[in-house]
Image (cartoon, rainbow, N blue to C red):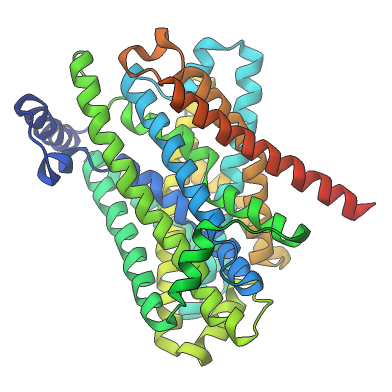
Length: 429
């Protein structure tokens, strides 16, 4: 760790210590603890969300908004547990798996987790690549390389301490939010329909079910369940149980704030698509390029440009976060890490192959989100197991109602996955 990095981290830690010792409350007291949940939130508004939300809105209008609300509530619960695990134990979820499970089980979990990280990176890289291609006309292959360089530069900010990286990614989240506030202004959604379909469930047919599972897979992200515990494990190290409780209190508020923002952005993606595409008879907007080209004549070039800027910010930031998660996963499960640039290059390769073969990027995005949903039960179930163990969590052990709610989330994910598999197999027979 460099002297500059130590100085920056010491400053952030001292600010947090001052809050803990003075029992300060309010927004100013929360500021030193903001960061981890906003990094995690990036994964909840990545390009995979664009693909599933745009397709859902164009095909079914506002009817699947309730899925986003439900998935976001699940995300709050799961990310809160992950952050709490790091605070309570000083270890990441993958590290606990390696310590507590047989070696063979840990290796299997690592393989599943790497698959999830790879599927995530495909979505993120393709999104940023598409944005560069459509926004400034850069060829897809070159745009892929530029995306890789941009994400590596973002990750390089870590040499200056965790705070600059947290602030920069937080600003990108704010930019995406501002873009969708503008898109809401441009698109004029029907607010009565938005409110109604946000709380009234609806699913009809295998196409809707595929998108339901895709939305859940795009919203609750396996790799960031692992990452969040790694972000909180040594950020502000509690010196006693009282400090653990206080730090967790601030973390819980941050999770609610960050995940609420991510949820509103996801809802805006879907209701914009419903308002602009579905209501004008464009029911088959199944690709991001098609969305951009259709958006331009309906709302104008400004709205289309704002859409691409948000997509670029989403793709670059979420790709950087995906690489961070990959490092936490490998270090935790197998006890070693590779240089960031090597992981960046290796995880770029599937995207390069997809682009070189000319495969449909948005279809690939949706499929990647379904893969994520299929992998999701692995980190969720292990997280619930550890968070409910008093000997592991101490004073921050899950209360029974939290464990019950999280088990219900895991059961719902398994049911959705099983339904998808049955429908897919039935369609092939």
